[in-house]
Structures are given as C-alpha cells and as structure tokens.
Length: 523
Image (cartoon, rainbow, N blue to C red; front, side):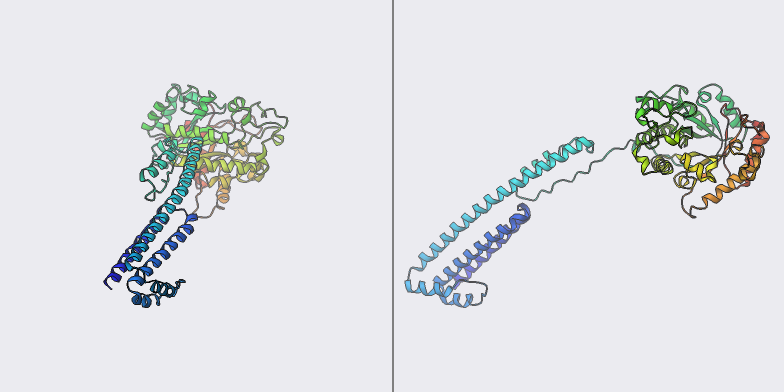
C-alpha cells in the first residue's frame, strides 16, 4: 500500500510535468496548425502512463487497482483481462515493475525527440517567413521614406529569436515610422487678430528707400497694416526665399534685398504684415513648366487678353507650390497670407481651354474651394491668418461666380478673412440699382456689403465664417465712361460705407502706392 501511494505521487508529478511542457510548447513555440498534432502525441503519452500505472499497481496490489480503475469511465482498455493474465502467469512482480518502467521510459524518450524534431522544423519555417516579411517591410520603408532611421527590422528580430534559442515567446517589435514634417520644426506663434486698415505695397517700393514714405503714413494716420508683394503678378518672388520649388525654376529675385530685416523693422513699429501671393496667374511658372499650364485643345499654351499664361488650378503640383511659398512667408514673420488671383482666367478663349481629365468631375468652384481648404489647413497651424481676394460681383452673381470659380459662401468656411474687391468702377452701370456706381462710392460699397451679410447668413450661426475685409478704390478709373477723379473725399466715402454696413476693416488699393492721405484719419 505504501508503494501505491508513492507511485500515485510519481504519476501525479509526471502529469504536472506533461501539462507544463504542453503549455510551454503550445504557447511559446507552436503555431496554431501544430496544436492538433501535439495534443495527439500528449494523449498517447498519457495512455501509456496509465497503462504503466495499471501494470505496476496490478503487479503489486491487484485488489486496490481493481477498485480504483472501476471508477474510470473514459478508459477503453480491459484491465481485468490484464489482471487475470498476469495472475495465471505468476511471474516475478519485481521483474514486471522494472520492465514496465523501462518500457515507459523508452517510449517517453522517443516521443520527446519526435516532438522536439517536429517543433524545430515548424519553427524554422516560421522564422524564415518572419525574415522574409521583415525584409519586404524594410524595402517598402526605403522606397516610401517611412523609416528615417534606416534600421533593418529583419536583423533585429532574427537576432532576438536566436538569442532566446526558441525557449520563450519573442514578440516581433512593432516599429511605427515617424515621418518628419518640415512644418513641425517651425515654432508656432500665437494668432492675434488685428482690425486691419491697410495699404497695398509693391515689392519694388518695399525694397527701396521709398518705403519710408509709406512707413510715415503708418506713423501719422489710422493705417496699421501693409499688404506686401511676396509673389507678384509675373510669378516672380520678391526675395531670395528658401523654397526648393521656387529655386528649381529660378523664380526668386532680390527686389527686397533683406526681407527678414524689413519684416523685423516693420514689426517693431507694430505694423500688421500681410503677404500677397498671386495664385493661378503665374506666367513664369507656366512658361517654365508647360505641363502645369492651362492649355488649348490643340496642346498649345493658353494666353489671356494680355498674352499671359496661367497655371492650371487642377494641378496638385501648382497647389503644393503655392502652399510652399506661403509657408516660407509665414516662417519669415508675416502675420497673414493673402491669396490673390485665386480664380480662373476670364480672358477670351478660356471657355475652350483644356483643363485635363479632373475637370470632367470637378467644377471650377469645386477646385478653388478644394485649394482654399487645403491651404487653410496647412497654414493655420503655423500661426498665420489666411485670406483670399475675390471679385465683388460674385456676391450677387452666380454667373460670375461660376466663370471665375469663386463661391463666396463656401470659400468663407475655410478662410480667416475674405476680401471682396468692391471697387465702384468694377460694377456695371445699373448694378444694385445705381445708374453709375463709380459716381456713388458710399452707396455702392454699403449696398454690396449689405448683400455680403445676407449671403454669409447662409452659414449657420456658430459655424466658422470668414471676417469680411473689403478692398477699396484709391485710383481713378479713366477707362470707363462715367467716372470721376478719386481722392480723399471718395476714399472716405467708401470707408464710411464699410462702417454703415456693419464692418470694421478695409484695405486700399493703388498700384503705384500713391494714397490719398487727406482721406485718412490722423493719429
């Protein structure tokens, strides 16, 4: 009886060892496909142990075994048969015990090496697949530039697996590549809104001593902002900008020798600085890269009434170039980016131009809105405000909006400021019920801006809506029949129209930067 107890303990310990081994094998090394075969091998080993136990117990203590085995209902071996047979033989109990133990040991060792061999084969195949997968990922990262570190993940993984000698689970490291965005290196500045009352300044004036005259205007009047050409109507950039795309086509100039110093000087005086960037009227880029230009159906470059080429707003490369230029202006210290000519040409023959396949699925308005949203999302995180100049006539004319691609309401959703050019001379006779708009500056400005308020009321209260900051006329439109000479009185009348319509900001345009000082309040 004491031996029965001892043997039971040994068998229990052996069972524990088997369970631990099985768990380690299945959890650490075996793929799912191998689980079934290992289970079968372990079951066979259990059966052999039970047979060995039965034989040992029967030889030593037959009666106790008979009672014990009668309780098992999941065994399909006739142990009574073994008992009777052994009883008839009358063999030595000691010999049977030794023989059974040796047999069980031999079978156990054989099963161990069989399982080990099977495991090594399966895991070698798994390791080979891991190396292949890691190698492919490494190549993909090299091609796409996702892994700036240049580390070979396959080497790291295989080294770790060899180190552990397949004795514990080694999870494959999950490496999340970090793509460094150049914009992330720019220190974001706080966006502080300013109620701008500004003037347009050409790059040639800003880069010459004549700028002192304009700075004096800021020092002595209500003017507090400057709209300075960064990328002008010709497509050239006014200073030596650190833009790879601009440098590639040699688009930079030295009209402003030291833009950084100029920005610093004006900032010290509290001037709100707006970078004017002409968007799709870019004859220089169009001539340098014909594939980015608007073309006629015969493949030749489209030219407007002045013989100038325009770039195609449907081209992503064009949109990326504009955002890159704007980003550099933000970096150097401008408070606001203002896109001008953010529209299609209205020149003769534009209706027959070929804009490419994308024009078949997107309207002119669609693509201008798409660019506006794209630029806003890229530039806002840099701490600059984003604005766009639009035709004043699009506020009330859906026909004009469709021709140039400017949707007043939709663009306002993706801008900080929208700047309608409501020059009285730009409205036809009879517009807004005014016989000759150029002769009624206060009335036309007030009526147009009231229409603007009604239009933008389509945007639900609480949703983002651009602030309206109109461009006003400080020049004489001699090319129209019913015009008048514009001076301080006419400029002040327009400003009054802005205030009467409920708006607070405005900009003055004069291509020669000669402004009517007597129309401005002194400070």
